[in-house]
Image (cartoon, rainbow, N blue to C red; front, side, top):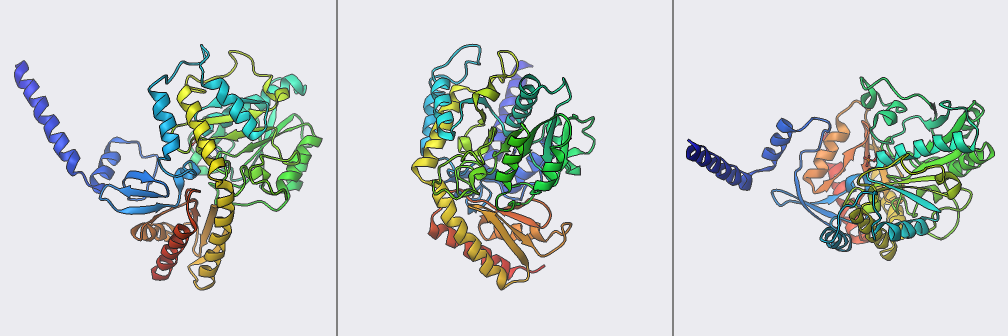
Length: 441
Ligand SMILES: *Cc1c(COP(=O)(O)O)cnc(C)c1O
C-alpha cells in the first residue's frame, strides 16, 4: 500500500517536472488564473529574465521595460552590484529582528540619513508600511509636540492620491475601485484638490490639522506634475501653520524625475543630488521602491529629531524592518544612483523623450499630450477613459517589444530604468512611433 502511494507520488512529480519544462506563456497565465487571487489585471506577457533595461519572456522574446516595476527598478534589472550585496549578506546573516542589534543597520542608518540630509530614519519594508509609519509619526507628533487634543488629529491629503493599499490608506483614497466594500474606514483625513495652494490654505484653517501628505508628482493618478512652485508654497504654508509637510516619494524619489527627489525638483539649484533646500525639504520623507533597486522590499521614513524623537521603544516596528539584507541592498542601490549619475541621466533623457513624443503627437491624432518630469512620463490617448484604446495600444507596443501599461483609462505611463542610454531611448521612441502609426482603433 505504502509502496504504491510512493510510486504514485513519484510518477506525479515526474509528470509535473516534464510539464514545467514545456510550459508556455499561456500555461503560466492559466496557472495564475486558477490558483492566484485575481487582484491584478496583467498584460499577457510572462517574464523570465531581466538585465538592465531589458526583460525576456518565457519564449525568449526580448522587451524594453517601460514600467520598471512602478519605478522600483530605476537602477536596471538585476544590477550586479546590488545583487552581489544581497547574495553576500544573505550568506552571512539575514534576520535578527530588532530585539538585538546587528552590524548592518547602524552603518545603513548613518549612510541613508547623510545621503538624504535628515537626522534619523525609521526602516520598514514596503511603501504602504512607510506611509502608515509617517501617519502614525505625524499623529504622535501632533499630540506630544503640538498640543492637539487626543484622537482629534487631522491629516490633509489630495484628491486622486495613491499611497498604498492598507485599510487606513484606502480610507482617504477617492478611487472607488480601491475602496468599495473595504469599510469601515479610518477617520482623520481631509481631502483637497491637488496642485491647489488656496485649497490647502483654506484646509489649514480647520482645527487640529497635524500634517499635509502629498505626492510631489501624482504617479498612479496619471503622472500629474503640479505647477511650478506648488510644493515650495505648500511647504511654506505648512511651516506657517506648524503642520508637518509629508512627501510620499515612494514613486518619484531616487532620481526618477531628474533630481534625487522630486520635492526638490522646483528649486533652481544645479545640484541634481540635492535632497532639498529648506524651502522644499519635507518634515517627513517617505521612500520605497527604488531604494532597493527592485531587488528586495525596503522602505524608509526620514525625519529630523524634533519629529522622530516622539517614537519610543515598543510603539512601532516591523519584524523585517532594518534587516541586514535590506540594509546592504539599500546602500548598494543608493551607491549606484550616485555613481552612475542616474538623476542627471533621467533629466537629460527625459527632455529628449518628451521632445520626441511631442514630435510624434504633432503627426498623429491617436495621442493628445505628453507630460512628466525626468523619466516619469505619460501620454494621453485620444479616447474616453472607459475606452480600450490605451490597453490595446499597450498590447501593440508589447508585440513590438516594449512593455508599458495604462495607469488610468486613457493614460499610459512611460518609466524605463534610469540606466538607459540615449541610443536605447531612441530605439524605444522608434518602437512607439511605429506602433502609433500602425495602430488601428
Ligand atoms: C507604490 C506606491 C506606494 C505603495 O508602495 P508598496 O510598496 O506597493 O506598498 C505608496 N506611495 C506611492 C506614491 C507609490 O507609488
